[in-house]
Picture (cartoon, rainbow, N blue to C red):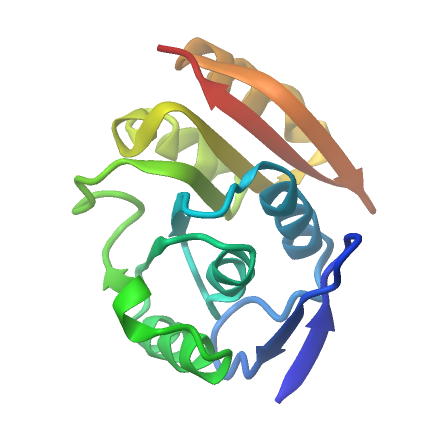
Length: 182
């Protein structure tokens, strides 16, 4: 088991066994996402993690008060590892679900906070359809973006109805938060 201390005034402890899945919290993109989740998630919010990997962002959101959580991943092994990590962190099974699907292909609910810590090209593709999964004035957090691709993602977010509300950079990686304009 591995422990990561997320940044913030009240540290939260995330216990992780990433197994074969992506995401231990050590990579700058995970840390950036957790910082953004900490800023924008309010207790009781719903949370969607696209490409959940090890489930680290779902765990952070749950520990910060998200009421119901959904994670998607294309990898069945990652989905099982994410479930194990959520349970390891004492997240009640009734609060979360993990679906094996491509991006948001089979997701029909709306969420207050949506996070996607995946590659730039996948984010650009995701932006075509993700607004159907975001609540009115909901927040989309995108990471896994290199600094050179920042403008491409921001432009596509704006084109798809998002107001850029926050940007963080760490070690050449960018995390962008956008609010869906209705």
